[in-house]
Image (tube, rainbow, N blue to C red; front, side):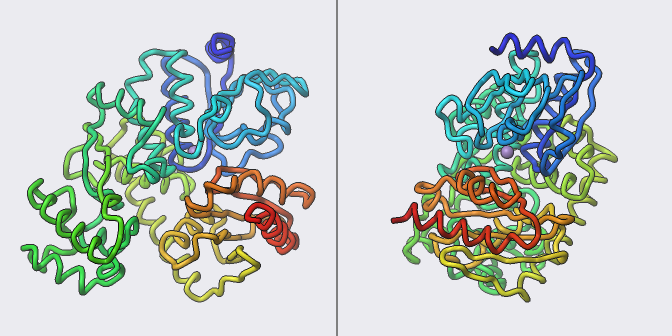
Length: 450
Ligand SMILES: [Mn+2]
């Protein structure tokens, strides 16, 4: 199967690369672009939140869908190409030939792996690409960026299975460094005080969202008050990091929390100077993600493929704009009442939220608000005549529930579509049907827990 798929791409007169709009998708697109360039193919790239009906109609070109496509196989017509995805697939064939299609599908779910932990979209693209072009290992940092962007390191405190193996390859290639360190977000992009204030896995109860307590803690550890806003984790000497980690673990234990989650594997890009805001792979992924959310995914792709200078300047501006959007959304969120139907807690922003950050906001709510482990968090926004819905559930609940299947089931019959992962899913339904969608999800949840 792989050799047929390799042949199909290699011989493409025109290659149409499609990819998802998050960091994992952009990293995947960058890998595909790297391959297409090296093979001298004529190609173009389209970044989508969701594939349009037009995208799946096929034609004489060869298609390569990345970090998306598996949920839409049954909508495809006369498509010749490859799907490298890790979202829950709607058809389990590696060679999908219904409806005039000639599609090779590579997806960890077909190998018995959990696509939400073991193998990201960019890892899937990378794995397939290594058959097309061995030199693709030169961009083996990209699956690491994509995997941490999709939070694949969250459950075990490190990347595992295929994602972990590719990280090791990137390390052996000298492209990334793997370290044991604090796992809070922002090692190279935020101040230490920001990290301790908003670090949430685990939350330091006495410091969480408590700037004064954080400042006192850091001053006690020899920090100058004037540096608190600027000094980053990555600027600290190893001994200082050790000292802080030991003391934070002590606090966590006194607070009765699992301190082992504080540290784990972190990934640094060797090509970035230490002063870089995106030395840390997770910080890099959030920058790449921001370029795409702000409508400039090409900037993210170029960053992935080592362009710096003006590209970096533009990316940093987009990142700052993206943070403004998120701050705005948080403000609106504070003024909006979540509505509950059984275990579903949902927030409908209508037109008040950019519809490409519903997932980001859902992640924020489940991470930062006090919500029960049994809740399904949904964030909704208008998308033309449709309602875009993004949902998150806790890792605990996702042991029992495959949210993507539940969303697919709830949306079908309402004139909508749904899909995604075990713990993070999305749906689009016609405006006016969202109430019914919530009811259906709640009913389906009941069947599972009883
Ligand atoms: Mn992905």
